[in-house]
Image (cartoon, rainbow, N blue to C red; front, side, top):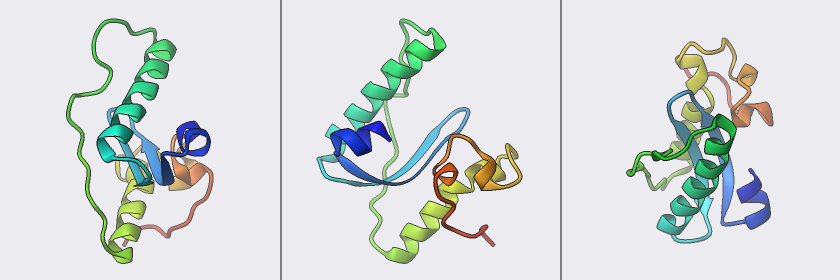
Amino acid sequence: MYNAQVLDPYELHAFVVMPNHVHVLVTPRVALPTLTKSLKGITAKRGNTLLGFTGGPFWQAKSYDHLVREEREFEKIKRYIEWNPVRAGLVVEASAYRWSSCQFKLSLPSPA
């Protein structure tokens, strides 16, 4: 959120930090490789400090990205991201998951 609000390289629409992966839905304002490098660098540094990790890589080398072309697809992806903790059995309601954009605004109903 700091990166989105202060540095402004993208508009953040949805996110979730899961135990073994992260999902974000953004509209980039810079080239995607630049954005990915920035996000991975900032979060790796903070994550390593928080967890006391040193030496090894924090993120895997590859990441998956997808260009969203339609509003309907955008909403489907946003819902998927925000309800990921429910599907994983971590919480009963998406709004109960601390590490998600649902903590700030629950914008979509439960997926059918």
